[in-house]
Image (cartoon, rainbow, N blue to C red; front, side, top):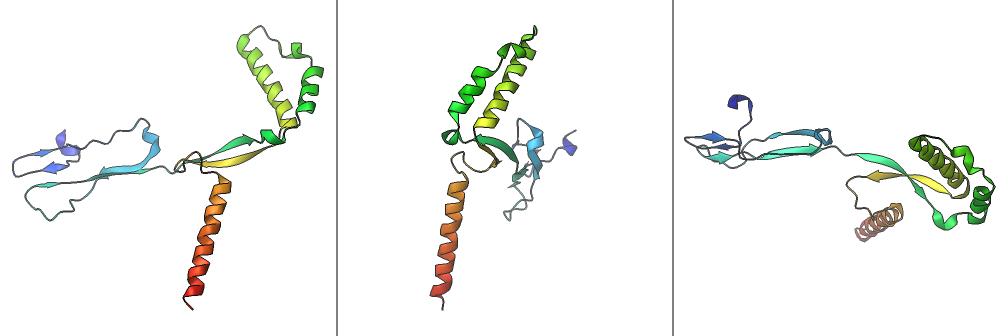
Length: 148
């Protein structure tokens, strides 16, 4: 059984697995394994472990609440017969209510779909990303001009 497990610590008298890589969701890992030893020691050495995470992005709807038409939303909510959502099964009742309210919000509150990158901090939104890119472009251009 030990022969199929990659070993990370090898000495003159023993071989063992002392580095373990654990994740809660194996689908978040593209590849992992044991690398070659990087120190020039032929008798006693330690092999590094590595992993390559999945670079995931996902889309999410972001509401622009500051631009919402709330008088219109109040009017739609007031005029709607909420008994239409009723169902004896509370789960269906909640789903009906949520679907109806969300459709009203879609009508009255602008929104957009954004791409969320797992590696970005939560506060790093598109406005900051575009300003960062603009600053970097400006620095690159200034560097180019200074080389003349």
